Length: 92
Ligand code: SF4
Image (cartoon, rainbow, N blue to C red; front, side, top):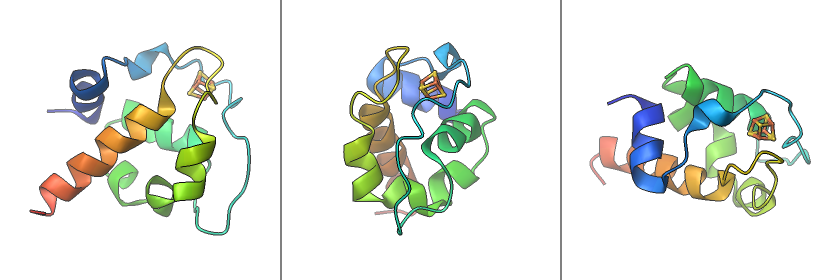
């Protein structure tokens, strides 16, 4: 199953709603390696890097993700779904 489908199934959010406006790039934190908008782009591309990047595991980013998308995507819920998928693949 693609990352897009996994997110859709878990959250009801379709990442293809994303317009790549980068408005969700609300901050830079020491424990992130790519911008939040890039994480969403990786999901759109079904790139496994989305599950391995430090940004996904940053609690600061996750908190900032609440309400960050101006087009109504729930990025907080998407990050939770991606974390769960990463843990599932790791057998945890
Ligand atoms: S704010 Fe929303 S639409 Fe814009 S890049 Fe971020 S996720 Fe995509």
